[in-house]
Image (cartoon, rainbow, N blue to C red):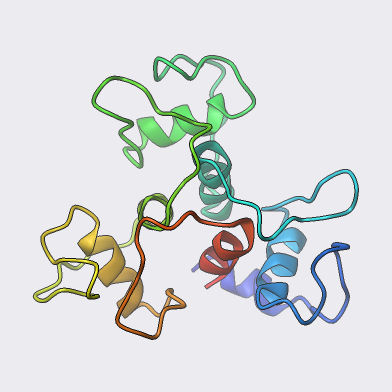
Length: 184
């Protein structure tokens, strides 16, 4: 919401990354997020829009996109989060109640993130008021699933790219898809 004014002021005719041209379905989103300094490419000039994101990378995007980063000097907020590059983002998100990790005390930062995990992280980061569905939001998303309120709320807000009856909640999230979701 806060980023809308930043995004609308940027012209997206120019290719910023070597592997994201104007024909890419996420071209505008990726370029807007790069201009807002939310995402970066790789040293070779690429963005790798089809590469899957892990939980730490997605969480960094959520934190930067929500413009709520508060640097944490400490780590150790989960058994597997010490003082790595992502520790400040993860620990800040945990202290803000955006993420819980798993019941065993781990966050699993290098695990590839799926679509519903990404939705949860983004919607929590932006403090979206969630709406529980009265019916199944999609054929493969039952109204009683833990993530149904995230999928339903995102759908009501026009954030989802799905236009059919399936959401495929367990599919892995790519860098391009995450950029599009955050941009929307």
